[in-house]
Image (cartoon, rainbow, N blue to C red; front, side):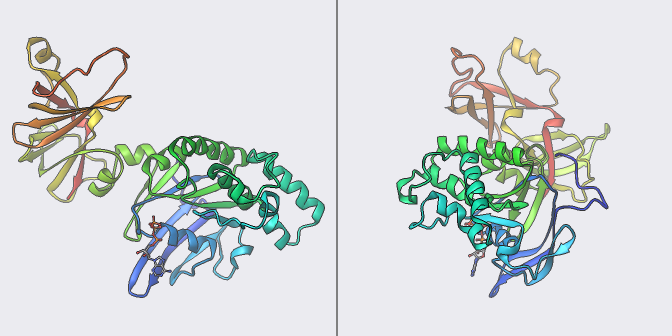
Length: 375
Ligand code: ATP
């Protein structure tokens, strides 16, 4: 799934310069995006950035003010929502409270005038797919949150749409159930070979499930990339800070004699960084370093040897140690007064944290660990 869509390749869904205004508010701003068949795509962004509005336009509940939405190359502007091969599963599930599980799932099939015997077969198939056997006669208020979520999923899959649109489908579930449901959704999507587009503001959820993620801000896409691409090669400071934890140092960059960038920063001295693939046009930059890329050691002869050749080497004092189970996060106050966050995996069960508050430490990272971004 990691290859980009080639020129000339027909995406399943093409969103072409779409605009949506609500009065004077521009909720979606000339947004373009291609999604290929079979992809699990996540739209990730803070509250109010326009994710749901975009999804609603795909489903046909909102009409774009400008731009086009193409499915298999055909403009679907004139196709009514229930005739589109895209189905939406809503955040609150929108189940009919007076209908039981079976009738909720059958609803769209009846409206589409499917034959009764076919409906029965399809509903049974869907009930098995989402593992709701035995609960067919229950009403929504006799189900748990997770079971309701499955009914909604079964209902939105019943008509076998080509694309399933999921608006925060797991928001109402607790953490444990959310994680197991994430795994089920991935498995289901692979098994059905269907295209899923999910809206979420939870970056871990997006990274767990999606082949590609589109990060949205203020009605436009900041970056579209694989989870790894977003995390390791963010295209802007905003994305770097939105996706995961990061240390940022602002500075002035110039190439050094070896072709690297030397970034003079007030907070961390000169940081040497590998040149980004796309050459920078500005010298006002910031350097982004993920906490787990930063190595620490105590001062002392043995430790000094370990980082003697480190190019980016900072000194400071540990001011905070947070044990988080799988990793420990250290805050190090540098001599400049700036704070550097470093995280280390806890690989051994009985290890105690390697550094304590007041320990003087050396922190270092390589030029490849640095992402240089324009300010
Ligand atoms: P959330 O994660 O909070 O659901 P979102 O990214 O899905 O946010 P949208 O629901 O798409 O955001 O809303 C984008 C912007 O458009 C918001 O400022 C919202 O207030 C506004 N908006 C959405 N629907 C309407 C509407 N029907 N009328 C007026 N403004 C609207």
